Image (tube, rainbow, N blue to C red; front, side, top):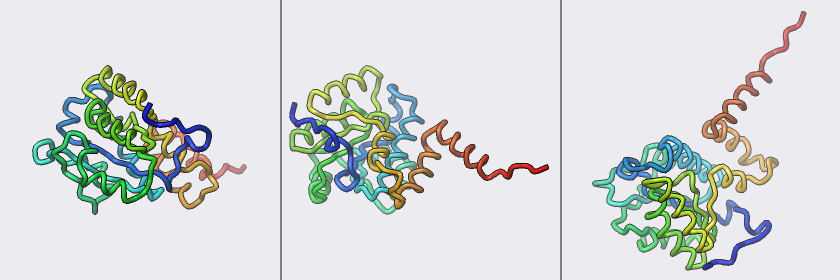
Length: 217
């Protein structure tokens, strides 16, 4: 392995040490996304982007040849309307100094990557960054591939390089860590209500019931 696997609390994500890179969530890549239902990837990627904003985690948006492959999806761009995604020609994001210089300047070492496709534009930078000393986490449900096999094999390959697969709900839960962190708790609860599916529906129902007066005789 390239990295020493962190143990205990050191193995958990911390917002002050994290940085997110979202790679190539573009129409061309979605057109051949077969490992996941596309709406699930969009939901996870948007949830991750919104959570990063809540926790003030720097987030880099990047596309590849967007003039032909299409603009980054609206669900992500709307979270960062002021940020123009870095448009690369490099297939491997980590070979583009426009991206790596931004990441390096933050000094943060917990690198979270999500993108399309897992076996190409996620695996390449993840493997290179891990070798450079970053503690790399790949957000698997905000990523996807041309087939389930391609996605699964890419995750297995990255694990051999000391990279940790994780889903977006685990990411935000580790960033929050304690519901007594009130500066983020309310915003996170709202985010989860919007993006976490049945749990969000149940939460809304709970709020309805709590707000309903008990009939008196």
